Figure 1 (cartoon, rainbow, N blue to C red):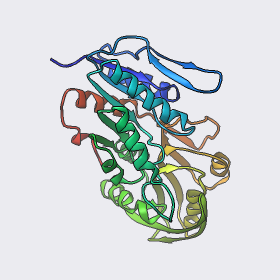
Figure 2: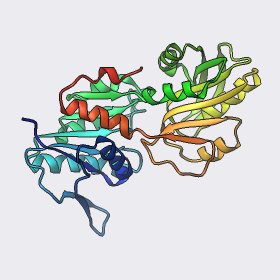
Figure 3: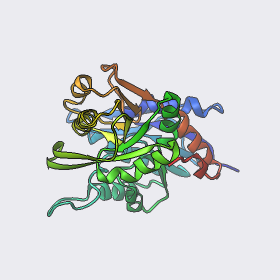
Length: 312
């Protein structure tokens, strides 16, 4: 007999949890939880209904502020202490994922630290999407279901009906992703090679590959300040590209990102709702991940294989 299933959400991702629960169906509803806040800023999440013996799915993307990550950890701990059978953290956007290695002396490996703290809080399983680096799965000592947004992006791109299509990576690190997309879309491939002067600031960029007369789609795991993709788009258009679009899973979109996108020659930016998106740019198209995660959750809960869900 399966343990009862219950869904809960952190404050930052309630919109997403409601979407997932609606798509999950089967009479599921979002559980009742709340947060007590003290005058000094400390907070305490609590479940307002029993979770004893239940498989509990807690939905929370851990984008800034860091409070979102702490809230998720406290909710996991609360569920375990309330005798939940299993606790699954559904983290579509895993924060601190860019800190996946020591890229210079005397720095933390933040992604590993977050994985350790989540594991220590008692989580039994993690679901996430398009990690900045695949090896982050190995930072956890519990099963990790790594979902790919290509399951949404590939059909969407096909429906655009673009001819002379080229898939591009904004940097060398994303070449594996671009190659997979180009394979499934039977398209050409280009790679941007960049050097950074400092964080969030690109120094020099060169494009490797044929883009003249092509409709280019740049694919990436996230779009932050949009400096890289806007510069890449300008270079590709100067090289004779017909159009440039961007498909990025996580719309971090910090600082001048919206202004840069609006002023750029990029035709369209396609993202998911793993992070809330401000509706202030007509160029930004948001695809819902609710159905995708509802499907994955259903298969995991009933012990079915999820490999058929993956495109990349």
